[in-house]
Every structure is written in C-alpha cells, then in structure tokens.
Image (cartoon, rainbow, N blue to C red):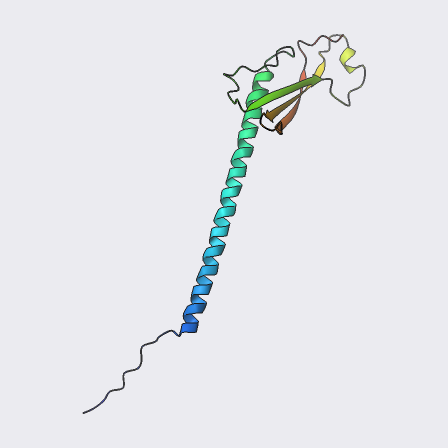
Length: 138
C-alpha cells in the first residue's frame, strides 16, 4: 500500500483569530464613532439652518414695514416657541449732520433678533441698514 502525503490544509491559530477579531472590533468601534459624530453635526446644522431661516423670514417681513409696525403676524412667523425682537436706531460711525441734510432720507439701523421663549436665548441676529422712508426725527 502506498501512502501519499497530503499537505495539511492551512488553518489559523487561536492567536491569529483573536488578533483579527480585535482589529475588526476596533474598526467597527471607529466607524460607529464617526457615524455618531456625523449625526450630531447634522443635528447642529439643522438647528442652525432653522434659526437662520426664521431670521430671514422675520427680516424679509420687517423690511417691508414701517418702524411703527414691528409686530409680525403668525401667518408670516408661525413659530410659537420663538419670538422676534426689533430695535431701530441711528447707525454708528456716520457724520453727525448726515441725517440732517436737505432732501436726504435718514439712514436707520435695524437690529433683528430671534429669541427662544423657553430660555430667552438669542438664537440668531442680524443688523440691517436701510433708508428710513417713514422715520420722523424729533
């Protein structure tokens, strides 16, 4: 009877399997951490977009109004958990006699802020300089 030598099939040792599983688990942990960070960044970006969108809606409406009418109807600003604060005053850095020129419309600075009602935090703010068509200086 002739015996043929059959080479043993390649097998992994226990140490090699443990090392491979450790590398795999570290890779999966890193991947899950990246996914968690991405989710948090997306949530923050959505919150920032929402705040800027509310500010843009408020500013667009208020730029068409007079300084006497700074209340925004609910149909234009339907966010009950937020409110808009508007302050109109003279812009800084202009010469004193700029707004007193004959036939010159006064330049006014509008500070528009969106405020979260639950904690009073200002979530977005913009300063807009515009001509005061309806402003009467006393």
